[in-house]
Image 1 (cartoon, rainbow, N blue to C red):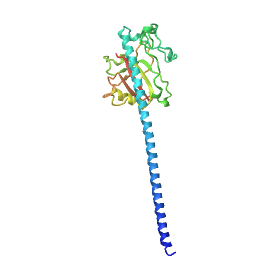
Image 2: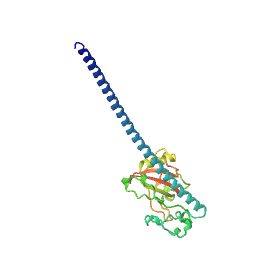
Image 3: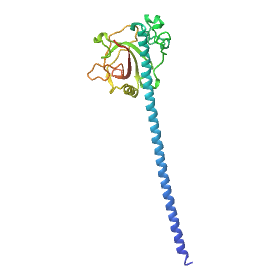
Image 4: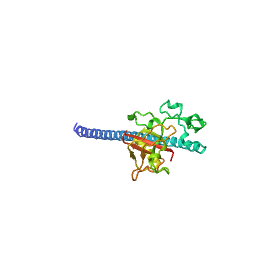
Length: 241
């Protein structure tokens, strides 16, 4: 019996040490789980950002490539003798609106969206590139009412409208990516553009990129911001004048 107390004291101390060690390992485990959860969360966020960035890049590239294909088709028809005023962008897929039908459309050789003409397959702009807040229709537009400064040799702005392919209602980040891919350093802001459907004639609309130091002056393609409707728009010159 005299020896029982020291023995119990040693056992109690051992138990306290074991409890302390157990608590220490529990704290370590909790800390490791918290760190792991944080790392997984950050990885998930990073993966989402990467996916979004990749999709923006793909949409911007698709817009540029499709516009270039149409520009190449226009150039080919022009080389084959089709007058720019005879170029036809009519196609049943428009559904009647906008209306591009005019006298030049009587010959399939003049049609951009026809196997006998430009051979381009009609398609909408990528829906993922559109700003849903604008209730976009995803349609490309072809007009002959706006002049891009220093693109062609024409200096009389009242008669210098280029044949333009445009798509508006774009997301800001898609527009920025387009300019990045085209090597355009900043975003041009314009008041408005006249996107009246091209029916074989040109008209006097807006002069674009006329300001001093405009980043789109002389550019065949660019993305810009239209302040009056508050929308981002991409244009591609199909026929300069």
